[in-house]
Image (cartoon, rainbow, N blue to C red; front, top):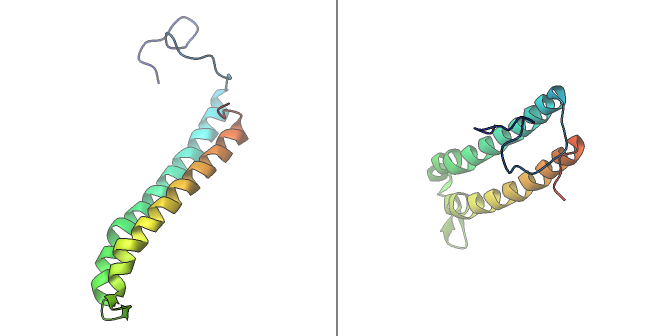
Length: 103
């Protein structure tokens, strides 16, 4: 939300975008915030939960390394990258659904 608005309801120098009614904007924000919370939950799981479980699975070794190492160090990074690409793709789909996609 802009801090300073012109008479037309837009911030000074703001680009002229498509007009969206309040109901559409609310539905758009509901989907966008739901996606954001989903990605944050995935981030939390792979940032904290996996690392708490790692010591319990460390007795299992793969190529001489504990399984917890692969899950915590390698698996978390892979999950973050996949989540970022998925988030970008899904957000673009939401933008196109509501007609506010970028050119």
